[in-house]
Image: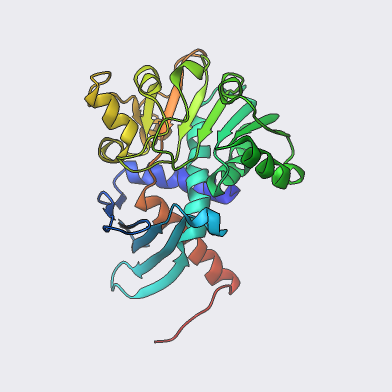
Length: 312
């Protein structure tokens, strides 16, 4: 995770500089299916050029089966010849790089004195964010909000001995959010799980889950009043349900963005401008992040002799 945070920071800067390219992802939702399939291509130019394609099935019912909701592969191909270089498990790549990007955003946008964390969700991303955020801020206390109090308690009980800060299951979601300096939403909800009236001045919010136009985790009040940062503005405009709904309701305009995260990292645009400002990072997940994470894994595997080599 620590390595991936730095890889993601470097990648977002490279993307902003045009060294990595990608289109919007394509999502296929078949009729009568239990989920959806997405494919996300990207290309890195330069002497180390490479193509990447993530093919991902998103299956909301998987957690009840004891499986991650994201299943698939990241395929890497040589940039000059197109030769197949690697096939990497997309479940692990997605889980780690998503939380790593949130950590990059939190380091850039939260207050330096942020110590208290609230996580809404009890799945893989909730667990990974409890791992990633403490790498960039000295978290002293984290509260977890679940779909039910029982889910939150079971989640916390399973993790309590593996973290180095106070970890609690929250009985009152609103109170947990009001007490937090940093908030992460990591659910598949179709209706808001986080309301703007809950968020205290100076809080940094990371909206991570519900990444389809028909879903949303954040209410319109929060989207309209917070300073909005995107991993990619085009992605948020096309794929973020809470942004599209706030636009339809007339609460925001199409340019309701402070900046892309890459602009903040390069210093081209400001991040947080005051201790009282509420900042919101809306993460959709980018193919360039999958390319960089999988490429990093391939380099490490090649150097250490890990993985399985196959001759064709």
